[in-house]
Length: 362
Ligand SMILES: Cc1ncc(COP(=O)(O)O)c(C=O)c1O
Image (cartoon, rainbow, N blue to C red; front, top):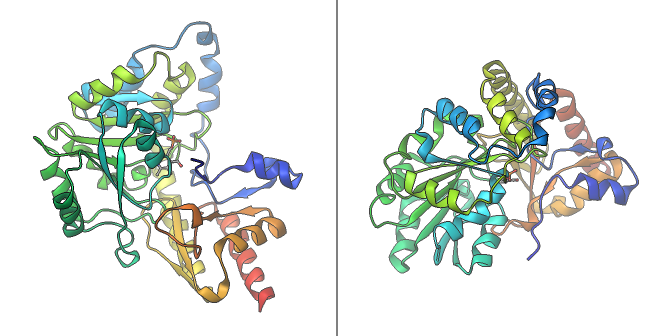
């Protein structure tokens, strides 16, 4: 099973005969400010440590995560990007029958299926911004005895939060003999107040999937982590191979969590640019923008504008701008695309390119 991802600038640059840096990438939703200032020096400073194996227990990073979230270290497991965690969870939880709320990050269904988990799919309506209601979830659980349920919060690629009733439902279900509730929160750093972390210490079956990739602008370093009940965290830690998380990743993770100024600057930048970008995109005839709480926006195109795949290639060929055509997300159609929220002049280039493209088509 091949999963399509955004951000494949190396492959596209090779095909187009340009360098990856020449591509303005709106397809992967990564903090446009880049990693926190000072990280480069911090990493250079730990060069000497590369002669030893990384700390096998990731002690320093786990302590930093515990302090940052005010959560017991027993509730934390660290992995090589959250994608590694996504592949261990079905095994660690012995998932047999899972309910996946889609659209979602494509690796979940693949990870479940590789483990032999049967996956049933639930598709919330676009009118509900692709988040399920309690009734929909209840109806699914009445039909089948799912042992695992997957949700995304904020959702990806729509960027919408779970409503309060669903949050209460998750908390109620994730105790005792209920199913494991996996909630992908890799984008929740952009709206941390909505995070479900306040429930993990007391909810036996709740597992939150987190990442340093998006908020700290570090897709190349690979740092992900789990916040869950001690029982789940222990099971996951048993599966993660020794030294899976490099020394640089452990040092960088702890460094990032101590950068309060950078965090505030990121939140301010994203909030301001997201509203501006949403406003500019909505002003283009035929584009409908979904309200998002993360650092990206989902857009639906009117049928007369053609499929998002044509738009993607037009923008790439004319302007070396890359957007995420959402045709490969199960549950979305050919009329959806997603764009990251970037810096003001970069967002301007996107808007100009879109306007000139649609104008040329008449
Ligand atoms: C919703 C979602 N979850 C998880 C991931 C995996 O991120 P990483 O492995 O870099 O932590 C991604 C990556 O695109 C994602 O979009």
